[in-house]
Amino acid sequence: MKTEGKTVTEILNNVPEERKEVFQKLHNVILENLPEGFEAAISYGGLGYVVPHSLLS
Image (cartoon, rainbow, N blue to C red):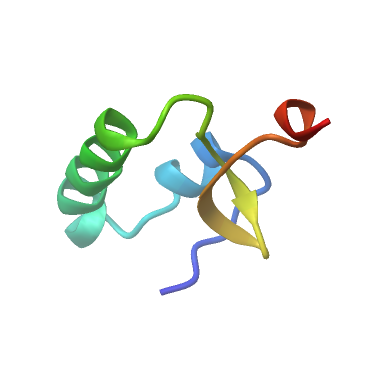
């Protein structure tokens, strides 16, 4: 499923209504379990979970 948006918030807001509740729950579980330093971001045009470039240098 490809959801349009240029920010994490836009993508989450544009998830189809029938999928929004489940998608938000999944997103929250992922955020709660990400290793320290990771964050939600736009990756390859979609929602991804990445280590910010600022932590790599």
